[in-house]
Length: 304
Image (tube, rainbow, N blue to C red; front, side, top):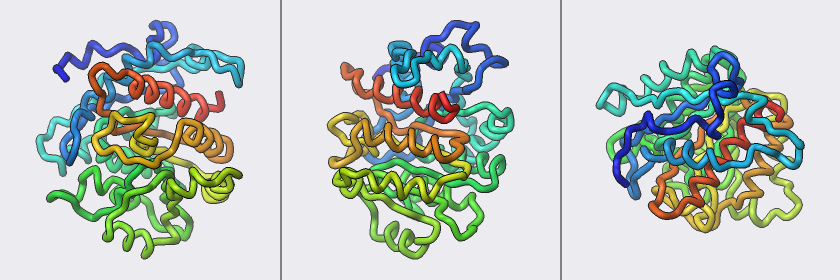
């Protein structure tokens, strides 16, 4: 995909200035077009711009709430953040420093990746802002390796690094949904930390017609502060092929919607990221899905 200046990206949802001014907006959209450790398909650095462009075609009206939450809430799109450092180990702390004042603003921050390694930096800032934090992690991959391809901050280590920012407190602090790919090392770590990590395998979610898995997710996160990280390859590759590491057998759209709505009803979703979109030339459906998902997350997190 050819490079284009990032500043040409539109405001999220294409909202006019009076509905997207910084001081009046409830939602801050932070594009993080960062890609350094992708290990199969590439292109996640183009993900934020693709989401922003597709968002201009998302219908603002929600037939369930009978409201147009976009203009009412206000969405301000920040300038894309790209770490200055060429070192991956230095870049992730830069993301933490950039996100910290945004979380302190009291606004809902929705970050657009970029590869999943950015989540460790974002959660590092979130853990300082909210002490009883629980991470809800949608993904095809457990991302629990300690190191991958020479770095402990790889996208394949994202969940493990994010969890390290949280002080153990005896509760489930990493709730994973949609997982269907895990390493021997990652599974050993998960089993050794079963009080802190709860994994809902994709096959079990898809097979559960009574949605008992949602009841269990609610039991784990109810009343808590939640950071939601949504790797788009958590969705089945039939509806989300535009990722660097697509996996069959994933969540479908309504599984994702049900999860977001349930978590938002029972907990406080404080911030979120949507990562790993690798746009495909000529196929706009994944971009639009990602944009609509972002709009849903922000609306439901703010009760709209």
